[in-house]
Length: 114
Length: 111
Image (cartoon, rainbow over all chains, first blue to last red; front, side, top):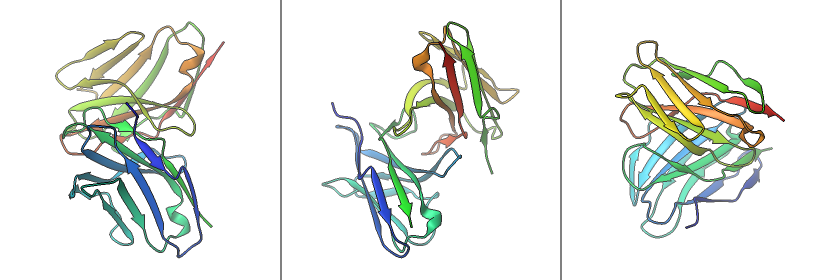
């Protein structure tokens, strides 16, 4: 049973470009969470999605950030017009049911904005 | 506003001895707590959890203690092994959909 998959593992973007981060949850998991970790900080919640639905986006910046989890395919975190402050590690987690319990994390995507 | 705090950024322990990692929280609505372990370039891996109705949970070498009145929890690792060297994150939830993480403690177990 493969774990949570994220790609790319490393992504370099120039300021103003778009970044697309992908997350495939564990088999049988329909709940996906995105977290961001800035340097020297803990992980901070961004958004929680179920298939085709955004359940909680209270941690998402109001502009430039969006997320989706389509019926088919991976969950996508999209950052438009990236700025240097977006440089961080972005982690995706999945769980088999609602509620935090044990969330299983992917290896993360390290985004660098130059 | 950091609702979960790990005030020790690092800890060094001799192999075979006990490692004690501490975590404090400020939100009295938190009712479920977890510890994650993280190696460089990997995602956090779930270690152990505890519900607020308990004050202790044990799993092999790992024990988590919860003191609700002090809003404090700790992770004990006995005996510590070199493979335990990693960053340990404390996390908490109040019934919502997300976890609140501390800033982590880097544990180094010296052979």
